[in-house]
Amino acid sequence: MSPRILDNNQLLAREQELIDTALQIMETDGTAGLTMDKVVARVPYSKGTIYNHFTSREDLLTGVCNAGMSVLAELFSRALTFNGTTRERLLAVQYAYLLHALLQPTQFMLVISAKTASLSERTSERRQAEHYQLEGRLMGPMLKLVDEAITNRELVLPKQMTKQQIVFTNWAGSFGAIALLINSEGKCSGRQGLAFQSEIFNHANLLLDGMQWHPLSHEMDYYKSVERIAQEIFPEESAQAGNPQYSQRMKAN
Amino acid sequence: MSPRILDNNQLLAREQELIDTALQIMETDGTAGLTMDKVVARVPYSKGTIYNHFTSREDLLTGVCNAGMSVLAELFSRALTFNGTTRERLLAVQYAYLLHALLQPTQFMLVISAKTASLSERTSERRQAEHYQLEGRLMGPMLKLVDEAITNRELVLPKQMTKQQIVFTNWAGSFGAIALLINSEGKCSGRQGLAFQSEIFNHANLLLDGMQWHPLSHEMDYYKSVERIAQEIFPEESAQAGNPQYSQRMKAN
DNA sequence: ACCTGAACACCGTTCAAGT
DNA sequence: ACCTGAACACCGTTCAAGT
Image (cartoon, each protein chain N blue to C red):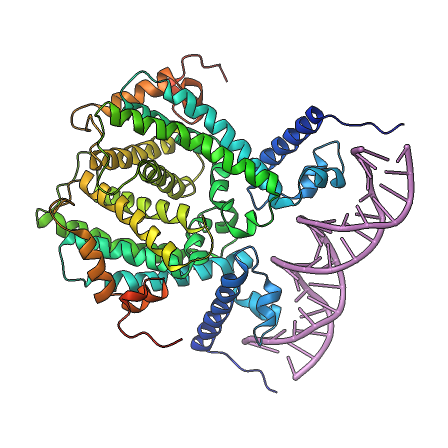
């Protein structure tokens, strides 16, 4: 056979295939259970070819992480279309974050792993750059939302805090609560999903009340907001994550 | 040589030695860089002996994690002796948490790893039980502090929230902010330590204002409180973590 | 009763040989 | 120009042999 020259699309498609395969393995075996041998076994390419795409196992992990951030960015975009106040839309974004964590816990957790030296040092520059770009795609819309809240006079920037810090502190709160709960108990039953939700919800409400982002939680029923968000924006995902009552078109199982 | 029968103290001392060695390796090589071979090389015992103490590499990691929780519990106790309001003492506990994270970042991060299935499934029951007990030793004093705040009328439990949830949400906020920042930038310069501090500080203030834990941040200068905490309770540790001005007895280097 | 270290299985990574 | 898979180094774990 004469040597073929692969175009960029083919390469990207194969890379995506490898990332999807890796994610599937991680769903059953966890991050520690992901080995290159297992990937090779599920895929019609050899080890050498995989190493043409990813410089190391860590590079592959960063690839999986980036793929997760990309779908998360999509969820954020959808969340921001929610018809409500700026604070409600922030709540929608945080709900999207929770959904993503419930549906892909190992991928969610990769975000911190990706920040450790042992991982980032062994990640290719290309994928590292992609990672930073994706962080921007996640942060950007949130910063715009803060801006909007400020022009709407729903939020006054607290003393000595920047917009970036507002976004960071909200992210940190959601992240911390989710990270600590996600591995705490047995497998994800519906009950579990709901307990989660209320912790994230409480944390967000306290934090936003603390920064005086109006309407405050005693001025508005945010429980109703979350229900509306789940029903109007994320019915499918909410059902998958253990809130079957939110699904409008469930299939018989 | 006739066979010796080891008493419990010898065994515990050796176990501690192994844990200390593992921690030293992790400080330079990271968690991923910890191998059983490296431990063997630094210690006068053979592999088999190490496996008499720890059922697996993961069991050893949980051992390192537990050791960290134990020193953290000591720091918490000291923090609670701070002479101030209940909210100031909570701040002192969070400051202790930050110090511990800055001084032992890999050990700090182990707390989430220890919650993943891949680690806890391969941890001995004895060490798992020890882990839960240590969680209690960390949570207990915080619950007492919340109780005290309630009897002092400095805090009214928000609607539909338990004391446990108050403690959890504070923990989650500090944890999230620290976890996201700790691996974000270059090595730990003094400057870095201070940036950290202000993020954690902002987050805690917003959260505590949100739950109306008095005195609120506009009623009291909590910057001064943190400085007093650093100077009066943790001068040595603050200096090591990159705030040299807080050390009252620095040695020439 | 306890310790030792050779032996084994597994896994990440490379690269000479192939098309 | 690209792919393959044997080969290598490394690492976690075990266990027969020793004292």
